[in-house]
Amino acid sequence: MIMNMRNFSRVALAILLLLSPVYGEVVTLGKYPARILPEQEGTLAFSVSGVVSDLLLTENGRAEKGQVVAVMNKEKTEEEREDMELQLARERLNKRDEMRKLEAQRSKLNFYVKLSARERVYAKDYAPNQDGEVPEDTLQDIEERIGLLKKELETLERRRRDEFKEKHENLTLRMPFTGRLQYDFVLPEEPGKPFEYSFSAGRNFATACDDSAFYIAIEIVDAALGLLPPDAFSASVKLPEGRQLRGTYSHRRVEQSSGGQSDKLIYFFKLDEQDHDTAYSMRGSRAEAILQFTASGDDVERVSKSALLAHPSAGDCESWEDLVGRAYPDHVILVVGERELLLRKKAPVPVTGS
Image (cartoon, rainbow, N blue to C red):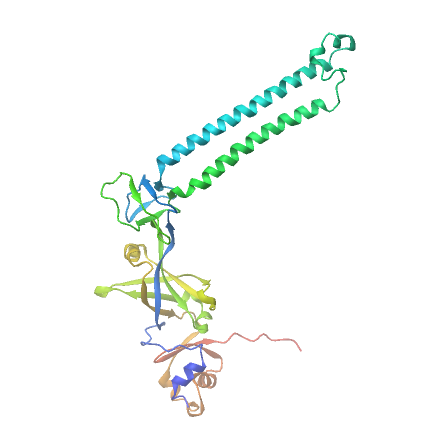
């Protein structure tokens, strides 16, 4: 019999019980835990304690991508930069001095090689050895040594600058994307004046929020919902004073669950721009969303439960699926509501040749 619908709902996971009547073709599937999320969010943090300067004072205001938010130990960093440049200057002088000596040897050898045997007798100071012979690879060795010194100098400068950048890059915080900025500490009383900041593990300096879009995010755990066309879903969150956030389907993605559990299927419903300020104040918070499904298309038919129960075969059926199979053999159940069922025509079976 069809009377015991609780048992049937556990058997047929693809069918959801409606919490309210069907109006038109919009079916309320139920209430689901949800979160209000921005397009993206990122945290900014220092890894050391020190003096903070160049603070971008735009609490909950907007900032452009790449804009400096704050600088740590700016004066100390400049002193270390000056020391690095002085050390590099000394290294350049030393390397260039070695290269000049080698270039002088090369000039002498080139001059000596071009002399005749008689002329070489009068140019003993230019001879590479007592015999006056010029080894064939001597000039090549000098050229290679000069080239090696140049490469050593280039490598040294690049390495020193990379080490300096790696050491100090975390001392300058920049906006990772255009959006709103919120500091995770109490702002100093005197804007623009450097102040002491104490680092602690797990503590963020600020949070950047990409406010170009906001979403109602709902985790879908029922496999049956995943089989329905996602763009037919919509979601809403009730707010005080009779207001609500309404979102239209945007996209879905699979996220990994913590603790080794199975992956989660998350549906994202995009909010209107007029709701961005409200969504920003609610971002990350838990909410209760109403999930709805809109059935559309010529192949969708609405049938009341009372009409189905009047069918002659109703007393012999164990489920709505059995009854629909007898009353509407060319249809399958799309959604089961509190008072109605939405049916969809079966896909035609292709005819094969004999």
